[in-house]
Amino acid sequence: MGEADSENTDGIVLSAEQKRRQRTRSIAIALALGALVLLFYIVTVVKVGPGILTRPL
Amino acid sequence: MAVISEGATLQSSSRPQAIEPSLAEVSDFIALMKPRVMSLVVFTGFVGLMVAPGTLHPVLAGAALLCIAVGAGAAGALNMWYDADIDAVMGRTRQRPIPAGRMQPGEALAFGLTLAFGAVAVLGLVAGWLPAALLAFTIFFYAVIYTMWLKRWTAQNIVIGGAAGAFPPVIGWAAVTNDVGLAPILLFLIVFFWTPPHFWALSLRRADEYRRAGIPMLPVVAGATETKRQILAHALLLAPVGVSPYLLGYAGLMYGLVAAVGGVIIVALALRLKWAAADLAAHVAAKRLFSFSILYLFCLFAALLVDHWLGRPLSLSLG
Image (cartoon, rainbow over all chains, first blue to last red; front, side):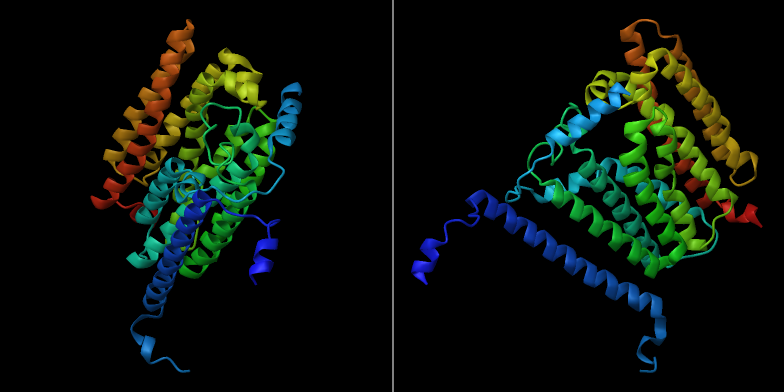
């Protein structure tokens, strides 16, 4: 493993700054996805209405 | 034509060729969505939603407005992806994410397409497929018809392309009614005729930059005198169109007064710009017209909203 890692020098190696920005972007994507899940949930409840629990399967 | 071929050269030479790790911040993706333009879109879309006859659950209305905003952001991102070569040579846009080198063009393209498809699909599910189709057409019109075709081809780019910015109130209206009648078409026409004097007032002051970027804006192709004449012509069209919702019985007296006074001021500012002989005076007059045009549009739509809340909704007169 160690030998394989040391040989893998041709790939893209991110700098510390690139890693930091990548992490920030990942967090933003996670938050956006979470917000979408919440939005879809609320919109579904509103659109289906009070009968949401009595719908036939 | 030489102007256009110069633009084409710029496009092919300034796009980065190699793919490198992204340096984009979250703020760069927000900038890609043109938040200032988006604020106007959201406001006019909101007014369209509010003054339309019928009701939409507040949650669905909020979701529809979010979709309109995201759709506008998608159009902005696609515009910045395609126009990166132009942005790189203009002072106003040089610091945008792609020309500044913080973002790869492919990132902007993927971001714009994802937002566009997402916004249209969600709007269709939330409010219906007519507003979704209108939103899809608006994004297509701005990103393809305006950005890729009209902007680099004709001096009337802003006149025809202005339609893209005029659709949000119609989309807002259609989200409630799933229909498009005369009233939302009047709202469309107000923004449509507002765009040329607004944007030409800006481009008059940036003519050198547009010339350098190879964009055939009216001041570059036809000169300042012709641009001022066309600004006045469009202001003279805009003023009565602005009052038309009142004249046709779709809005109350308060709106009518705001639109009439605003229309007189915008025509007066266009006249002052036309008569301004010296460069400095014309520069100041163009700046005043540009600033007032923003206030004018805001006041018109705000007046419609207040009119609606005061109990004179457009729906009453649609009968």
